[in-house]
Length: 320
Image (cartoon, rainbow, N blue to C red; front, side):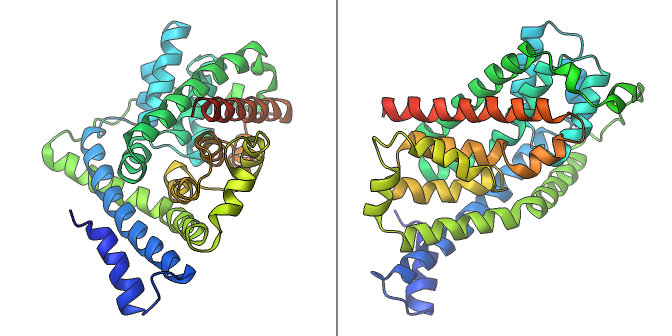
């Protein structure tokens, strides 16, 4: 069956630009054009459909869903809602303050803050479309586990003592959440606005991710990748986590890079650890969180995530 995105990549790279099919530049351009078309087509469709379904979900409603529930139930809701709501690191501070004001345990709040940037339905659909449903399930399952356990570990260290004083003084009040327009037209308008807003926020990171993936796909020899990051390389997983921390993207933007790494023979666990570190442990997100928690809590949060990602990577490398 003809893949229209693959066909478009061939036409642009080989017919329009006249690049050779066996050249590094030809392979890189073909990969870039194919993935740009495929990923943005999937993004528009998935964001619109999920926008229709998510017209009633907002950060305020997430807070109300979790408020006043038993710890295990609140954590499960926080992790689940974090996985289906596309809140990025820019939402971390208001969400953190809202959760604190609502009396939700900080361990539960951290579970949400881990799950939200790392897992979302857009990334899941892209993973299925580009890499298959098996990898998508592995990534989502590992992300949910890290969010659940990471929040529990954070709670053991009593992070309340490291919250900035002004956060405790903020009184957000019980302002009523505006009643949304639940008509079909209202949901359509909300979904279109979601498409515009999310694409505006992530398009450059997706393009950068595809560009990096194209360079790896076209110019980095498979033998070199396998030698340094392939199976049996125990240090490759911590190295992948460390490399991912300075980068800033999200689960959607890093998928093309993961696609290229897997295509070159990088071990599955190493790729998963790399994806998670970029999505949930980037320096910009740490700096945003620093506005509400002090350095000891931030260092603990980063350490818990880094160790979790390394263990996940090693575990999947052993299994596969």
